[in-house]
Length: 243
Image 1 (spheres, helix red, strand yellow):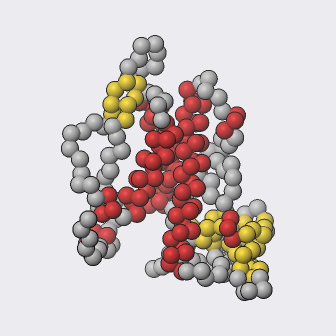
Image 2 (image 1 turned 90 degrees about the horizontal axis):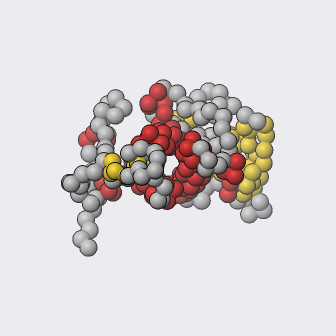
């Protein structure tokens, strides 16, 4: 396998322009959907093509990694379940909302209590996407109704994907900053189980509790719900937005 030094960033990636002036596209199909719901219904393929891009997904960088996550979990969540076009479109729209709600970086301002973060939805609609109240426990969803079926698939996707995303934040921060201790003022995402889609619990570190060896393994957080002590293994530090 031939290898060569990584090339420079394309000009479009380092030039200030409006969002989505330059975009990348990745086809995640073909996908089989039902033509209609009922006995004898047959499936048809959506987004079927006869040409493909060069097999170099790493050229896209982080956005290609995001596409890879979605395809990986979507295939395992949907599996052999046949959905109609409308059901599949609904599922993808809800997955899109979950992905665009993820915190990217924290924004620095003069408010010491601020938990302001930047998300993909800020570029799309100018503010955070807030998901509607919904059932969190998968056991309460049934397969009797078509709506419940789509919601069960969405919840299954969310449970898988958000773990991958949080792990990627931890890995990237560790790679950039080594084993530096969490500091007072850091904004973090708190890892919690059974969260509904598009909900990201945020907190700000207000005090640290180093051990005898000087390593911080527990911190006190200020959140919208109050003060909590949490081990650092349950925290993902958000990088700081630099002007």
